Image 1 (cartoon, rainbow, N blue to C red):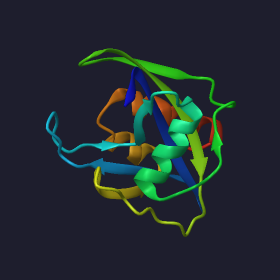
Image 2 (image 1 turned 180 degrees about the vertical axis):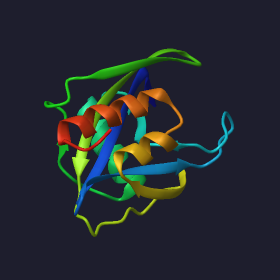
Image 3 (image 1 turned 90 degrees about the vertical axis):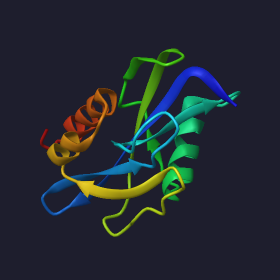
Length: 142
């Protein structure tokens, strides 16, 4: 069961010769929506902290267990969802240049992009704002 009104976003990035690249994942079509590009994200389960939810979602959706950063991203975003106001807690994680995700059934594709390209494909504004914040902190072009 997930907590109503709370979710997490994880901005996953890795080094490259010319800076950073960011993971975007194509959500599988669902009962409420068409397929769209997003960041790793999901709801917070009952009794779970935002940090634990972010770690769980990252592992479930990509197969990656990696240290998460939250303290240096003092932001939460919000939006009006179908069931009311939702607060999004933003995290970031870094992986090796040669690592590739193992997607779960929630996703049908992924790509690594420079910040500008990732911003161009992300469907919702909240993931774009999270990516801009993290990319800016990492010195990546946005």
